[in-house]
Length: 104
Image (cartoon, rainbow, N blue to C red; front, side, top):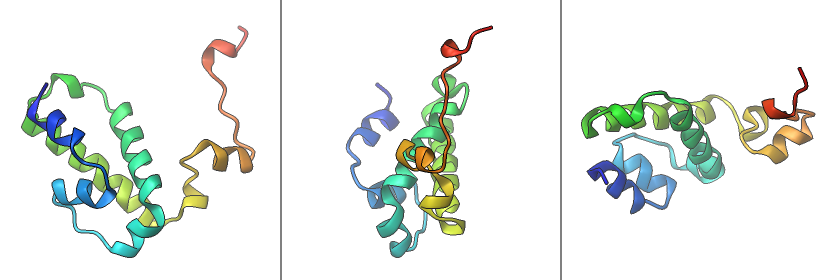
């Protein structure tokens, strides 16, 4: 296990993630959007190709970029607009369909 992966396993709060990656934040943004920010961070990391091939320093920089982008999404917007969680997507009429369920 890489040092980065080991360190990330010890983080539990949004503040800990922000501090670990050295990202300045406004407490009121985290208070209102912490779960949305961490979920969006996870989504950005999951969609980023080639992370496994990076060394720890490069991976840390990539994770920093993903977390910063996730945080900035909620500085400029809000949870209802961003619709990170399925319950908010469904409330807006967004119903993701898995490609396996589509008939050719």
